[in-house]
Image (cartoon, rainbow, N blue to C red; front, side, top):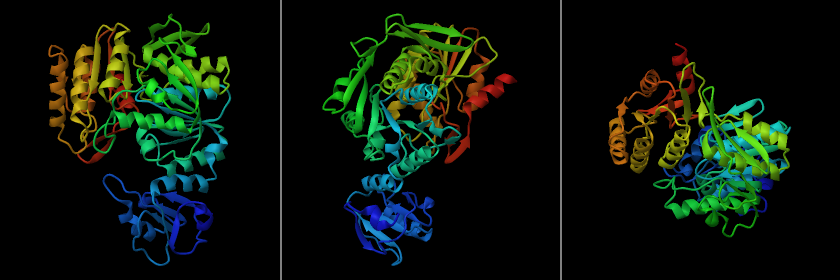
Length: 484
């Protein structure tokens, strides 16, 4: 598409260059620029894309979109607009021929449960005979394809390209996680979702480079539903009223406690068989089973079930999808030939850890053992909170590393120890800085009937330490060690 056609009807202004310049891609990373690319200069927290424009041109970029004038070679087309980030979303959608309009699109938002709910809904739609794409924390995937992502919700230029590829490969539906930071960064600007799903809300992503306060966090969660035809809302969450306030879309509700359009009965059952933890529930006289533990898994299943009903999925597809889904890194069981249960989970903040550990306690383990650390260069409050909740709810803690990045690990562990003392100073713990050895220790000391929860990494297959990104496939490490 030529540049003139691409920017027609927008507030972009051509400062220099040929209006008929051909554009074949959009990017905001100068390392991805090449012939035919429109490089968009974004001002970020740590760097300003305007300083990399010349590098993008040297790499072959055909044009540059900037927020203010910058000196560039005369042969390069330069376009200026007041808001390059939002314009990137508009132009990317236009360049890739509005792929979101060619699919049924579902956006899932909330503090916890986004990934699991998205995977459960995708499994239901697949069981219903649809070809489904997934986008979120676990990456981008559709039949025959899987790609890692840098963000839960990709930058708009990458998102629109991925949606285009899904459509071209025959996908008729896409379920994606929509983060509050992704909303704030206009990554889904201009997209109309068939359904938006709200799981729950609790304080998170508040601090430098994230949200200024809880009110801002909530506002960006709510903003998704201004772009939806219908919204699916958890009526048992205390913040659902604020989330629904002023939302123009049709609202359909679900829950366990409060009156709701889709409500599970009181006969919820938790079972533990073959090293796996299950939950079963009834809606409108139909019994459903989800292969994940606890009440929070029932909430995620209800959210997926409600959205699936709105999309016309059959009852049999809903049952098969919920029963068969396994979500990588989300209360994921690791099969071991041992008389105890091992699972890995992404819980990396106080709210998620508390929800997970309370759920596991409901299965009455002989001991609940938790292996965890906290990330470096992140809020110290998260470390105190993680330490406190694990000391209160676990029988034994193994504290270790978790993406310490460039921060000294001892500083992080000291904060976790302080949290342990706050939660319950009587809870025994072991401190093993090397995460691999910490996992080995927990497995070596697990006994019959124990549940060992290794949390914080979940789906992640790397460990960031001392400026290096090291391979760390946690599931494979556990399986290999237990096989020996």
